[in-house]
Image (cartoon, rainbow, N blue to C red; front, side, top):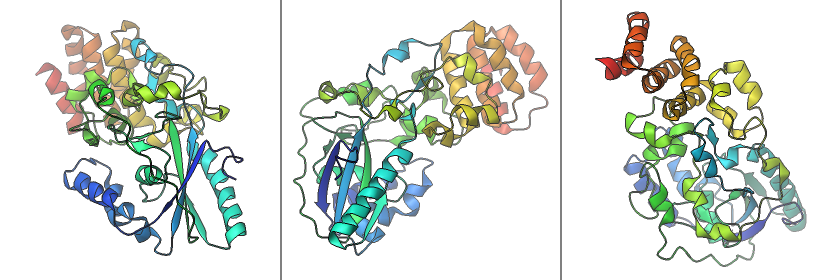
Length: 362
């Protein structure tokens, strides 16, 4: 049934109380590695144990759809005049594609077994990756993401919990071996050790989840990555077996296909919403997104962006104004920046923005 609905992989696991995933989650949270993601801590017990989420559940059906790109997503990192958007966010929002199919699968299962079922696509306190590994879809690699011998690192996951006692599949073994490409390629050293992630250093977290200014130590390392990061996924050797996704709605749109930074710096809230409607990018919001674009502009060495950056010194958002200061400092001379300082600093009331000015010139 799952394959007929368009899923590329399906597996079943039995649900039992506790488990190693809950222990790893507790260690992750205790170390503060979740950063601003308070929602992970709020429902940690349910997140670490599916039976805490739904005690009557007996089995989980894990499904996956490939979003493997047709070309190397790291090529854009050399195009500093463009903003690099993670492959997963360039097409239609995966929630809107997976969830209707998963609901149909649930209806079929209920009809066939008489059991109850609930579906989840990355919107509930459920750890999909450990469950997918338990169901035989792949294993969690050293970068903590799921890796498949067939689809590489490029899989969207969905979960169907059911009260039916289904025959489980065999869990997948770890096939990373001695390889550490995903660890070594990380621009911000976000992996304290193999199979461990410090989200606070991860560019995907910084550009999507983090609500404040991006710490100075990470800005140069971000390069032109403006939404997410594919580095650790793209270098995985298992990707050589992955064929490009057959779901055309995951393909990049013109609006999201690593667009020119100059276009993105001019986005107000309405234009941002219109451009990224129906994509994951929209959920981050205009202010955080333009903050990211300003980091890329500052790293671009593209002097044609100076006027666009300068205009954002007047932006309503302190996030944007503060990062505009940093970007302008990288694109102009000190004397030019001091001229802007005299115009803007005295009237600035936000302490974070004043701090950016002071770091640059005082």
